[in-house]
Image 1 (tube, helix red, strand yellow):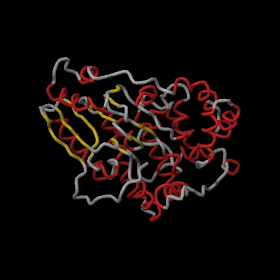
Image 2 (cartoon, rainbow, N blue to C red):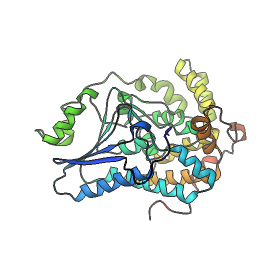
Image 3 (cartoon, rainbow, N blue to C red):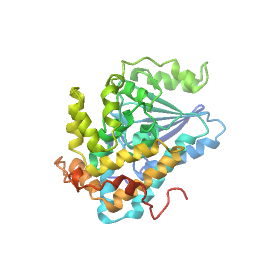
Image 4 (cartoon, rainbow, N blue to C red):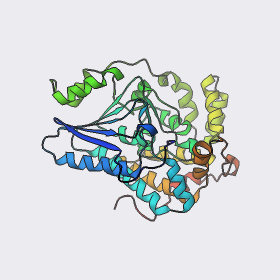
Length: 359
């Protein structure tokens, strides 16, 4: 999710791709929008990866973002809303097919790919950084899958990561859209290493000069520090108890019975969100936990994306309330779990898009 400015013209590249010694250095270059992704950026980044894969002098790829606000705030969801309102299903499918192909490409890339998730890294940003071979966070990192805040569900392989978080942390993060700092991200399985932001330039230099030790992970470990402890392990008692319930209403009931202040705050958060998005997200994360690989999770998410875009009013309404009119007063349909079919999660997961993800 991102409050991005309008998509730039296709002729304007928002990816800086530079071969630096043996390093292919790709930088998301849209800092005024916290490097929010548009289709051109996705295609340009994919083209750079294609070129470097066969380049004999490129040994590894480094991916980061321009500016000091964040790595990537996600995709331009205002553009998505415009497509939904205009009934442009083909354009919606085109964007997500390209984005998910890039997510899978990053995960399967044959050369080491290091992502620096410094600052805000949300939605589509997690889809880039979260599947890299080496995932670095800093003291400025703020990672989240906040899609339920706009009546949507985590995608870009987010359900795959969430489904593999410890205990029921994945359900908690997915439903609430809660932000993770660097330590939280490592604990939850969204990152591997913590490097202070003032050492990132030194880390880049080490990749370029290839000083011993010479593998990317070994080089990162030279700069890796232990962050302050994550808040998540201490919260596992109430998170695991509540978010192991079968349904969202049951989760809410368990949270109301917990004495922890954070549990009460979580109730307040969930009560503001789309019942449809919450129910489908719970089903999606639990289904992703049983899937064999990232590609299967991306295919499941693609079906959910197209289901929301084609059949549900809450996605366009959530974007309107949060990012267009900014009144923060979405009118969810339905507004209550009492009016939501119990089968809604299964219905969403069974949706088959007209155009398949993998062709």
